[in-house]
Image (cartoon, rainbow, N blue to C red; front, side):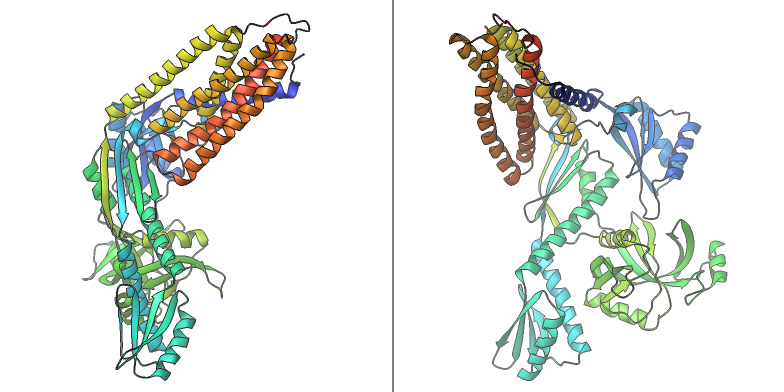
Length: 617
C-alpha cells in the first residue's frame, strides 16, 4: 500500500498551516496611518513620546485603530483618510518642529499575526506608484578630495619632522613633492612610507628639482570610492526617513550609482530638494557652562542667559546627554564647518580601551583648529549640526591639548555612542556630489491597475489550469490542482516571511512558477498512466510513477534553479526580484508537486489493499 509514516503527514500539515498563517496578512490590506519620528539626535522615540501622542489624540477626541512604538518612531493607524489628516495636524501642532509627522500606510493585520512576525509583502514602485531616481556619484571629486587631504597630511608630516621641501602640488592622479637634494628626499621618503600606508612613492628627478611622486595604491583608491558610496547611502537614508515613505528602496547599483525608489511619493520636486539638501556642521567654542571641571565655568552667565540676557556674539543652546539637559553659552564664531571635515570614524583607543571618534580635517580646517585650541586648553568646544534651521549640539568635549587636522573626541560611553556621533558628523553633507541621471514617476492609479492586471492574469491562468487538469486527469487532476494551490500558498508565505518587495517582474515569476509546478504533476500523472497501460496494478503504478518521475523533475528544476541563481547574482533591480521569486518558486513547487500531491493520493487510494482502478482519465 502507498502510505507515508505519520511524521511525514504531520510535517506537510505543519508546513501548510505555517504557510496559511504567513500568507494571511496579505489579505487584510493597508490602512492610513501617521508616523512620528524625532528629527534631533537627543530626542528618542520612547515611551514618553508615545504617551504624549496618546494624550494629544485623546484631547482632540481622535481614536486610533492602533498606536505603537518601534525602532524608528511612533505609528498610529486610523480608519479613514479624513481621520488621518486631522491626526497629522493635531500631532504636528502638539509636538512642534522637532518631530517629523508624516502620512503613511500601515498593514491592517491583527495583533496575533504581528506577534508571530507575520507581515505582508511590500509593494514595489510599479505596483504602488511613486518616484524613481538613479543618482551618479562624481568619483573624480572623491579622488580630488583625497589628493587634497593627502597634500595637507604630507605637508604636516614634513613640518613636524623638520624636513625641508621646496614645493608640493598635485595633478589628476598623483602628488609631487620637490626637494633640493637627494639626502633630504631619502629622509622624507622613509618618514612618509612609515606614516602613509595607503600610498606608493617613486623618485622622479627633473632638471632642477629632486621630485618624490606619490600615488594611491589600488586598494586605497577602491576603499575611498567604497567609503564615499557608503556615506552617500547613509546620508540619503537619513534624508528619506524625513519624507516618511513606507518601504523606500535605497541601494547601490554598480560601483558609482545609487537607486532611490520612493513608493507612494508623487511630489518629485520635494523629493529632489530633500535628497540634494546639505545640512551644516559647525564647530564653535563654548563661552560659559555649568561644568566645574573645565574652564569658563560660569553658572551666573548661564542663569542670565536663561533670563534673556545673552552677551553679544553668543547664543544659548542645550546639550543632551544621558537624558540630562545642559545649557551652554556658545560663541557664534565658527572654528570650522563640515566642509573642512574629511573623515569621522568610531574606533577604540589603544591606551584607555574606550570608544573614541577619530576626526580628520583638511588643511584649512587643521589650521583653524590649531589656532583655536592653542589658547583654548581646558575649554569646551561644541559640535553643532544645523538642519532646517534647527541647531542640535551633538557633543561638547573639553580640549585636552593643542590640536591640528587629526584629533580624537573621547568620553564616549560605548561603541554605539561613538558610531552615532561619527555618523551624525558625516551625515551633514554628501561625501561626493551626485547627479540625477534618470528620473521617472509612476502614478498611484497606474500602480493599482498593474496590481489588478497581475492578479487577474494569475487568476485566469490558475482557472484555466484547473479546468484542463480536472477534465484531462479527473481525480488525479483535482489532486494536482490542490497541490498547485498549496504551492502558491507556500510561495506567498515565504515572500512574506522574507519581507520581499513584490514588483511586476515578481508577479511574472509567480505565474511562471505555477506553470512549472503543474508541469511536474503532468509528468507524474503521465508516468502513472503509462504503468497502468502496461498492466501494472494501480497501487504499484502509483508508487512506480512517482519514483520514476522524481529524478526527471529534480533534474529539470535544478537546471532552472542554476539559471535563477545566475540571474540573482549578476542581475540588478527588477531582474533580481524576478530571480528571487523564481528560486523560491522552484523550492515550493518541488515540495508541493511531489510531497503534497503524493500525500493526498496516499490518503485517497493508499489504504485500499485491493485497488481495482484509479480516476486518472
